[in-house]
Length: 135
Image (tube, rainbow, N blue to C red; front, side):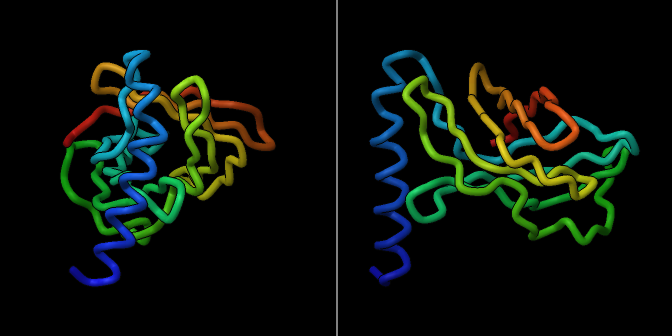
């Protein structure tokens, strides 16, 4: 096993073990592929969440237009969720950048019933979002 695989496996185990107690409260660990809500222009992001060191992060894998077709975007490959750390209530707290590039410095996420509930707060207030699990 390469050093990278060992580090990735231990980081994943750390996140899963720190969230294991949360599963007793019926909270899902939000690792996987998620589909965002459409923004004002109808753009939808497919974001993969995974372990990043001792926390969790999310990168854009695909961008789709309002008809559901892949569309070229500089967002592909960009990190949009940062430094998500498990909280005692089973949620994860970190930072987010939305599809318009707005920095949301306090973002709380929680996975329930195949949906990722996000409360993202920045200088312009808070927004509540619900993303659907793709995988």
